[in-house]
Amino acid sequence: MQTVAVISRKGGAGKSTVAVNLAAALRDAGQRAILADADPLRSSSEALRAHSLSVVETSASKLFALVTASRRSGCDMLVIDTPASPEADIVAAIKVADLCLVVTRPTYLDLAAALKTVDLLRQLRAPGLILLNQCPSPRQGHEPRVVSGTLEALRFAGVPVSPVALRVRQAYQGALSYGRGVTEWEPKGAAAAETRALADLVRQRMRGEGQGLRPANDVASGALFTVQT
Image (cartoon, rainbow, N blue to C red; front, side):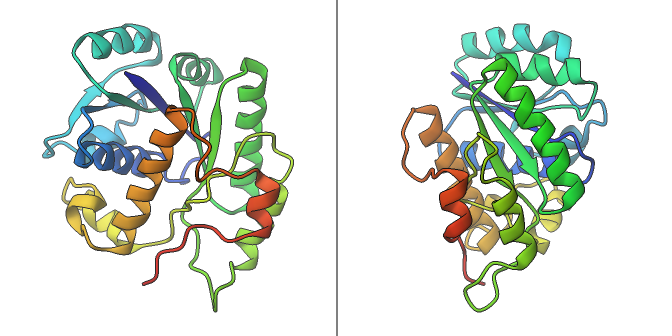
């Protein structure tokens, strides 16, 4: 079994949306996935009350025991929706994770919070991947300045940047309002395609494969994964 901690220390970055959709995409791909809601706001639990995906409400102090129990139950992938604070709770999630997915919007304040998380990952020598979320779509084949500028700022972050970005798409909120992930809500839609790509990337990373991953400086000079709409 492997564990992904979805982290954002800035409210509104879409951490819970990413956690819900990643877990649902992994389940749809045949993985026995469990979503652990360690955020006291319980956004993930509320979103999936009517869903068949296994959701467990927990806390930072119980994560180690949950990982052990999930492994014994035959779970393939445990996705943790972490709290935004305090730092001690975030550290607890990082310590049990095989991969930390740092979620950030392409804004100055979100980026500042993400870089603090990256510093924490480096201190703990924890594997991480930075995910840009709620990105505006490319125009005429070029990333908007706010996206390209964020990628440039992450050039020397020391943690890989995911070439898969999640865009601003109505499908994410539409799916959540009905307790679904986008891969189930609109399986042929652009949001579902990019979420599947993220799930594939996470699985590759877990297997120690380098496919699909580029250093931040290479991503900054290239193109992110794009789904045509």
